[in-house]
Amino acid sequence: MMAAPNGMQPGSGAPYPLGSAIMPSAGHHHDMAHVWQLVEQLSGLLHENREKWEELQSGIAKVKVKERSKGDGDGEGEGGGEDDGPSSEETVAELQTRLVEKEREIEALKAAYLDQGQLVTEYENGMQAMVKLLHARCNEREAETNAIHAHYLNLLSASHNETVQAQLTHQAWQASLQRVSENVRFAYRDKTEQALPYMKKIAGLKEENRLLRQKVGWDPPSDSEVEGEEMQEEQRRGR
Image (cartoon, rainbow, N blue to C red; front, side, top):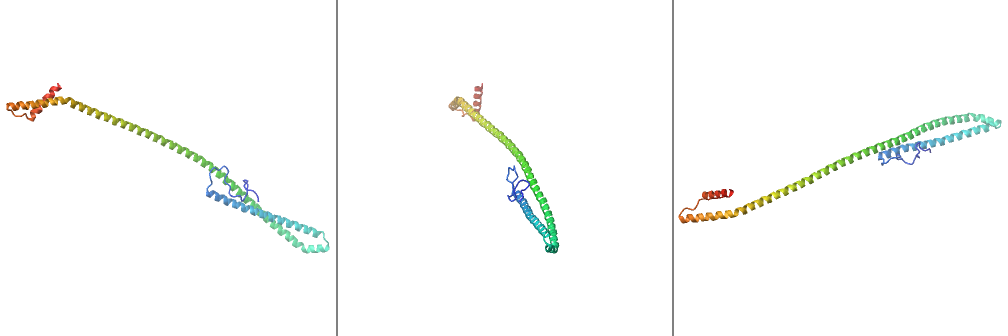
C-alpha cells in the first residue's frame, strides 16, 4: 500500500492540518475521514491490481516456458504442439488483452489517487490559510474588545469621580445651610435677649400707666394707644 503524497499513511485516520492552533470542527473531521476512506479504497484497488498484474506476468512467463519446452520436444511433441498452438496463442492474446486492460485500470487509479492526494493537500493548505485568517481576525477582535473595555472603564471612572465630587458639593452645601441656620438661630436668640430688658420696661410702664389712669378715674388705655406707645418706644431705641 503506497503512502499518500503528503506523507500520511492511508488508514491512519483524518489528520489535522499542521500548524493548526484550534480544534477542527466536526464537519472538517467528517470530510477528512471521507477523503481518507476514498484514498484507502484507491490504495486497495491499486494493491489488488498489482497482484493481478503479477499473476498475469507469472501466467505469461509460464506460457512462454511451456512453448519453449514444446518447441524443443520431438516430432510427436511438435504434433501435439501444433494441436495446442492455437490454444496457447489464444491464451497469450487473452492474457495480453487482460494485461492491457489492467494497465489502463492501474493508470486510471493512479491518476485518481494522485488527484485525491492533491485534493487532500489543497484542503490542508486551505485549512491552514483559514486558520491564519481566523487567528488574525481573533487578534483584531480581541484588540477591539480590549479598547472598548478600556473606554468604558474610563467612562466609569469619570462618572465615579463626578459622583464623588457631587456628593462632596452636596455635603458642603448642607454644611453651609446648617451654619446659616445656626447663625440665624443665634441672631434671633441674641435679638430676643437684647430686647428682653426693653420688653420688661415697657410692661412696667404699661402697668404704671394703667394704675395712674385708674387713680385719676380715666379709662384703661386701648390697644391702639398701647401699640402707638410701643412704636414710639421702638423709634426712640432706633435713634
